[in-house]
Length: 371
Image (cartoon, rainbow, N blue to C red; front, side, top):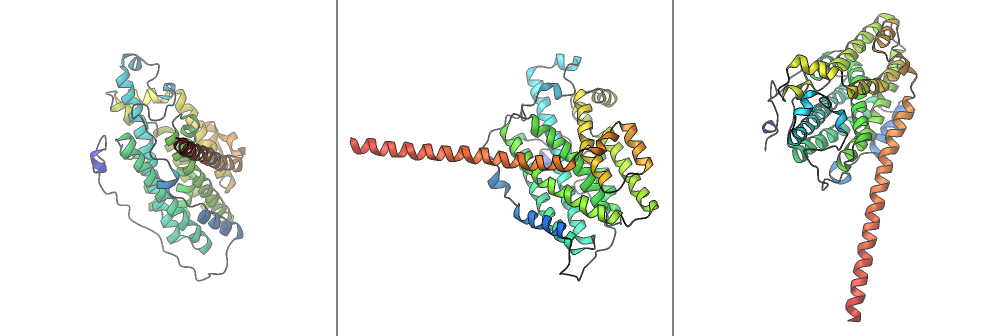
C-alpha cells in the first residue's frame, strides 16, 4: 500500500522542492581536525545500528491505545467533547494523536537527513564533513523506523505541519553554511528531543519506548556536534551577524511554541479551527511540553554564544530565560544511559529465556531416555 493511501488528508503537494542555495565547499586538508570533533565522528561510527535488528518489531501495538499514556494528556480530556465520546471514539482520538505526533517525527527526520547532507556539502572543515556524513545515516535510519512504525503498527499518517515545513524551508533556503546547523541541530532537534522524551518517559508500551530511546541516544551526539561547531564559528562573527542569527532563533522559537499543538487532529474530529486552538492553548499537557521544549533549546543557544539582549528579552517573554542555566550535558548523558539500560534489560531477559529453553530441552531429553 502506498503511503499516500494512509494519509488522513493528502499532502498539499506530493513532492516538495526547496531551491538549493549556497556553495559546495571542498577542503584539501586531509590531515588536520579538531580532536573533539574527530572523537565524536569516531563515536558516530561506533554507534551505528540496524533498526531491523535492534528493535523488536514482533511486539504488538493496539492502534486504539498505541502509547498507553494517560488520557489526561489528550487536549479534549475533561471537556464536554470528551464526555460525549464513546470508548470507540476515544480510541480513534488516541490513534490520531499518535499518528500526528509520529508523522511529524517522520517528516522532521527526513528534514534532518537533508540538512545533514547539506552540511556535508557546505561546511568548510573536513572534520565536520566527516561527522555530518555519519549523522546523515543516523537520520535516514530514524526516518526508516518512524515510517515503519506508522505503516505497520498505526496504519495512518498526517501531512507535515505547515509551521514545521516553514521552519525547514527557512533553514534550507539560507545560503549561509551555518544555518542548517542552527535551524536543525539547535531548534528542530531541540523540539524533537523534548517531544521524544515526554513520550519515552510516559509510555507503557515497549515498542515505542525502544524506538524513542534508541533515536534519542543518536540525537545526543547530534546536539553535541552542533554545539561544538557553532560555538567555534560564532566566536568569529560580528555583532551584526550574531544579531541576524538571534532573530532567526527568536522567530523559530515563537513559531514552535505557538503553532505545533496538533490542531489538525481536533479539526478531523469536527471541531472548528479557532475552538481547536483555544482548547490546545489551555491544555496542561501542552504547557508542560512547551516548558520541556525549551529545556533543550535555551541552554544550547546560550552555550553557542547567541545570548544578546533581544534574545534574552524574548525568552523572558516566553518564561524560559532561567532554563539557560540547565545542564545540557547531564540531559544528554541521561538519554544515552536510558538506551543502554534498555538494551541491558532486553538482552538479559532474552538470555534468561534461552537458558530456560535449553534447560527444558535437556529435561525433555532425559525424560525420553529414562522412558
